[in-house]
Image 1 (cartoon, rainbow, N blue to C red):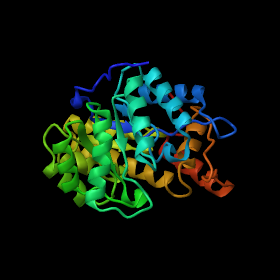
Image 2: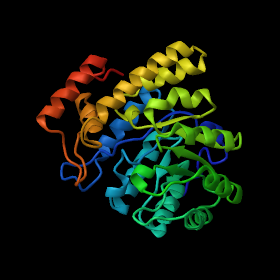
Image 3: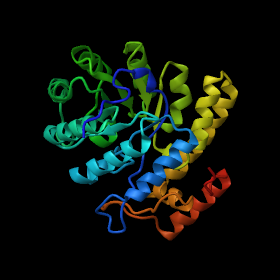
Length: 310
């Protein structure tokens, strides 16, 4: 199936709160739960999310098989029906796998892909330039968004490297900045061209990122508790900065709640508690223990988001 990407020529659609989706899994943990994907996508759309980012860090992408990743991407695009952009994370351990996943995303009608640097080996900018150039050329003119997350990927995408790559490859349209160093995001905004997309990857810094010219955020917390993130963005667009800052403090509390223990499981447990999907995670990730679950439920109740109301 080949479908023209709905926003391939419309980068202005890439703005606001883009949810870094979790991946609903079957009870065995080795397959995608398609009904869970449908439920999650419609939950996020009903809440007003501006875009979806499946198979990233929160989506367990690097732990899933190529087949499972493609299955998930197909279902997300199918359920979204072009209502919001879908940027599929296609980062993997080899360029060949990244290209296959990226070409698949293009064929199913996604709006672009996002790619982390290769991991394990320490690579300099020359090696990273070659790597990302190979990928960009293989999928041209399909949009590619670089994904800087050095704490997980080990190798960092510097702002000068982004500038060079985006100048050489017109389909490299922007970057998700998840270094947690706000100076890096400031340098990205200052260096990038006006039509290039600058997305914050730290839920604590969304308000600040938009204040200096960022387009929005790819947010992990918004996959489980999207409401305060949408309130933050809407208040910012309306020019009500005190209100936006208030909602930023709530978003930060959501983030704190979700990163207090083991990765990913808290996001999925919140969605289970809200009757959206089941909470199975991919090994070697683990489920919450009883103490962690009790703390999560208490925090979610305090925030007022224990129940899902459309």
